[in-house]
Amino acid sequence: MTSGKPSAWIVRSFVALGVVLVASGARAGDPADEARANALFQEARAAFIAGEYATACPKYEEVVKLRPGLGARIGLGDCYRKMGRLARAWETYRAIVEDAARITSTSKSFAEKSTVQKRGDEAKTRMGEIEPHLGWITVAVPEAVLALPNVVVTLDGVALAREALGTRLPAERGEHVVDVSAPGKKSWEKSLAIAEGAELTVAVQALEDEAAPKPEPKTTPETKGQEPPKGTNTATPPTPTQDAPGPRGPRGPDRIPETPKESFFGPQRILGLGLGIAGIGAGAAGAYFGIRAMQKRDESEVDGHCSGNTCNELGYPARKDAYQSGNLSTGLFVAGGVAFAGGLALFLTAPKRTKPQTTAILLGPSSFLWTGQF
Image (cartoon, rainbow, N blue to C red; front, side, top):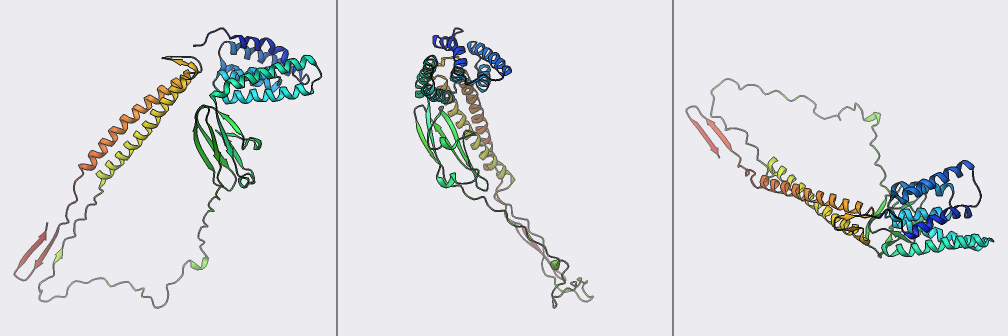
């Protein structure tokens, strides 16, 4: 677990934070907004020092919206970093470095230049500390796709700006999804897994047209109530009559209807086959969650976030996810094995197909014959 005392660089950041909030603000805003920003900043700082990062980060975000000074943004980046949102922290620090260079080049105040330059250097240093733990994704989109009206490219559900396409984007280790959609086109999606330090390029393919709906057949009034063509015999077939009286000769064989043939895939075999397939599916799902459990355990031990069964705030969510995935994997393997074994037993013990049974009876004036095949 993390210590209750903040490290030295955190303390130094908070000491200078109040000065930078004023120095880097372009102009004073609404007094009500100023008061709200000050109150939110105090609440965010207290929650950060207490290690309550899930509470501190949203408050820092509100402070930055109300008064986007470099100091408040550094506090927001530090909060993202503590929560393990390294890609978001890196992007926050990069924007600070860019803005610090711009402000330094245009400011005429030596004090402001010095403070802003210091904030920019701090952000650049923290970017360098994060970069070894990030992966990098480049989304390459062809011009033909970009030319589509209202095309949207997302990475993990977040829409990417046009200028971000074709550039290296930071990403945490793990699975990510790139999705491209446009009206009238089929969506294109690509899933990928990235490791620390890895660089991957996702080449977006051309979007296919959506299938046009088939027109429904039209019924015209002429087709309703048409009479059958001439020459067609529409008379009702005659009803069979009883045999005329007279001497009765030998009758032909009266066949008893054959017993329907039993299909090889009877109800029992179909049930057994379904259980077997379900068992295989459960086993595959169990393998997936088993692999995920190992990945999450490795992730929890990165940078010493977990040692044995003791974890800090950054390692605990990954370790908890690892245990849950492991338990789910075990349950799926057991359920899949039972289902597969039951299905196999049902399939193998199903009754074999029986041969059809036929019989025939021959009647004569003074004879009786019964034949059959069994």
